[in-house]
Picture 1 (cartoon, one colour):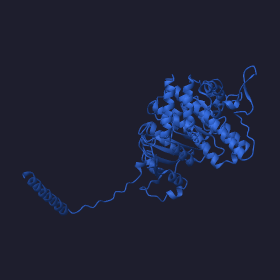
Picture 2 (picture 1 turned 90 degrees about the horizontal axis):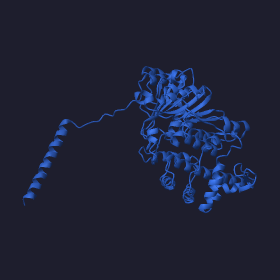
Picture 3 (picture 1 turned 120 degrees about the vertical axis):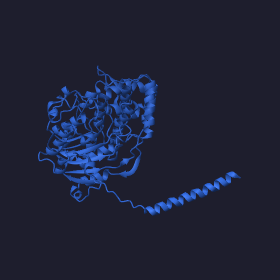
Picture 4 (picture 1 turned 90 degrees about the vertical axis):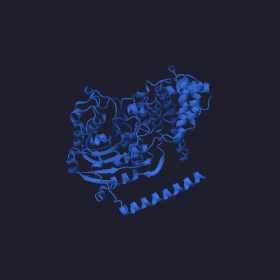
Length: 499
């Protein structure tokens, strides 16, 4: 969640680049993310060097090769790698800094982790261009970024989200990021495993993939040191698709900063025949776009066979089901309309979820979760691909998630998320709860009888407390008493005015 201080600094950087001659909003945004990446690369190296020094070990950087120099085509030494580091060049004069960044540091970061071969990172950075053309503009940007606490490694995603708002594009394009605490909740619900194959077909800045990575490091740190597990983690565990090149570039940067060297990140339309992933993933985490136009002719035929519609939220839900192998899990965000829509496509996808999958949870979220960018009401669906179908569905009525539900989104004490995670992982206890509670279980037959309706209000019961009113005689007596008091006061007022 972006803070007021960070907003003011991003505003200053944005205005500086803009007045410096770059007037395309998307170009301004990309220049900011390149600079943030340069700083985070160096911050990571400083942290590793500090850890090694504390252990009395020597640290050899794979990125900034100590004692080595960048060479030109003739093999002549041009500049030492250490001079490409943010901690070194940010102390230079504006002119010298500009020369180092434009001529050496920026071309260098485009090749990071490539080592002569194509990776997700090198692929999406290949057409990146450094457009800042004035030393003073770069100096102001570097100074502002240098004063920002970047311990949160997903800061590029936060900045991207904020800049989308500045471009007035977030609400109309559906391009707003999932809040990190919601991502963390969904990850905790599905509990990624060390052997999972994880996909987000609408990955954006890779928030869900990074959430899984963080969870795995927390719970499987020792196992990740093993060669086979490390190779799977770095190369085959994570897959992400998107149609926005800028988002993919930011996602690739984020993945690299989190130690994921060669994720399967690609520019493609996940709903089209380009996407050949079918029945091979063990975990899907996603918040697909709720808006946007799609051409039926471009949609994969097997997806349309399950759900014939142009609505992206329904098509992506069908894609998630198609992507999972038997036993695979999914946690995804859907707009409320998916839960109760009456169209043939709405009913078809809900029937598929109930009869050919094991729908485990429907978590209704308050409408302010995605403010200030959208006020749409949403829900989290959790299901497992299981031909045996659904027996019971757990519903939870989330009323608070740690932030105010207005445009300011300030932190508050009320937060249902810990309770949601706890209750979900102890569903036996949920059978004891009444329909008047925040959460409860509904038998699948009841859902089928209600035309596969999954809206929580269909099943939740409201307790009406009787209100006791005084007898009519008492009410009339009170009215008469009040009228007499009014009449008395009016007489006093008239007497005062007549003097």
